[in-house]
Length: 245
Ligand SMILES: [Zn+2]
Image 1 (tube, rainbow, N blue to C red):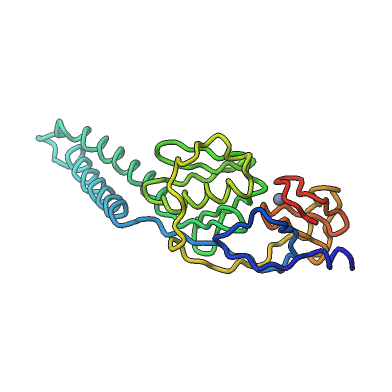
Image 2 (cartoon, helix red, strand yellow):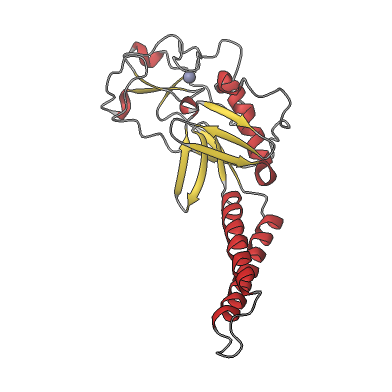
């Protein structure tokens, strides 16, 4: 088949996203793909979260005792309501920021992913990224109807890699962010893992809207991950303009 012969099988290191030259980015569904897994820089933040939770529990206990359990004559202790409020605030802060910054992240051929639980990874494919937003505290990857916030304090290596890969894969989505805003990614950071072939049956071709009924009919853009039917592959990716042959 002509379409099959046009596929150039080039093994990509996960670090290089391939640019320049005459590279063709058309991929089969089963071509090797990989990503990097980043653990958060846990030590201090994790410790503080645990400490905050414990102190909140202590305060809550003391507050409840002072408020309602001091016996008839003594009545509620005047500080008890403040203890309760402090407990609630501290508990909320620890829960919010602690949880938020403790999740491992994935960055690679399948886009950006966040591990919400064991075996449960929420991903935004590069072709679904609508915008990257950098603030002083976080790099946020926005998709349609979803977003992944990457806190710089605990996930700087992952944020650097996301920005660097986005600049190559979907440059228009990161155009708002200044050059050099984040350090360049460190090739030693993150554990490289192979990715399973994507589930694409039931999706529609980006170029022709044709239903992809069989996994074998799917072709992928190796740069942004956009999905095409093998009969409708355009010469350039409709999403990232990578040459598809
Ligand atoms: Zn593409």
